[in-house]
Length: 293
Image 1 (cartoon, helix red, strand yellow):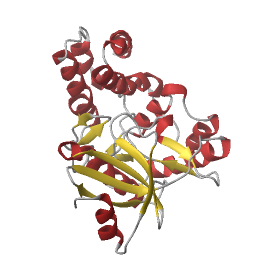
Image 2: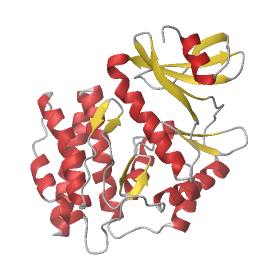
Image 3: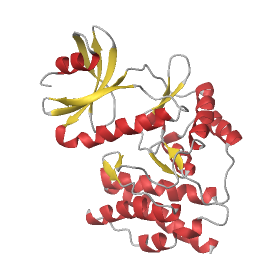
Image 4: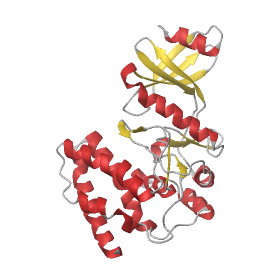
């Protein structure tokens, strides 16, 4: 389609008029807009055609989450090419921050998501992105091996290619199995994959909503670990979740291991201000691994 109006009319099946298109906060990667039309209001995300994989995999992740019938996500209206751009059209939702009630509901719903199953292997049927960084998801039956080969190693390799020194990374990679004592290995669970406070909210009725996933099947603890970053979620969220799923042995040690993935990603996306933190986390994790061996 050459115009957004033509795209909308073809998608919705009737003539439509665009009344306004207002920029809104939607991350630093895409052009995000509140699109008001003569019919409905939508959330529009646009990228260059060459970068369409980021939005295509976001749509696939939202669809995968919706299929579990556990957590609410914005409805996918459609996607496609408009001129030289790729557009993703979602349901518009007026969202506010999570509060005690919505946090408690989300904790229960996230536990249901993590119990939903759907895969015998870790990973997913397609690669996607964590932020703007490629996230490989080739399946593996071993979680420690998957997390080393598909999560930490690509981020560490990218950081080193960009000139960031991570001198103690190799011992951590080779000793990752020590973080999983007997009884601590997970079974594959559907994950949001990028669960921080900026990717969750509540609607006008106080119902929680999740968006911007980096979906795959992995260890539920990875979602919980990253939820503590950037201020965390309401206490009611954690209490409600833990009433459904209890902590596994070694959780406190694995939390920084899982968050290292995101710190390395921030190092690769935003630069050297994250290097000192990454180096310190690696040193502390190596010390914890030695203590566990």
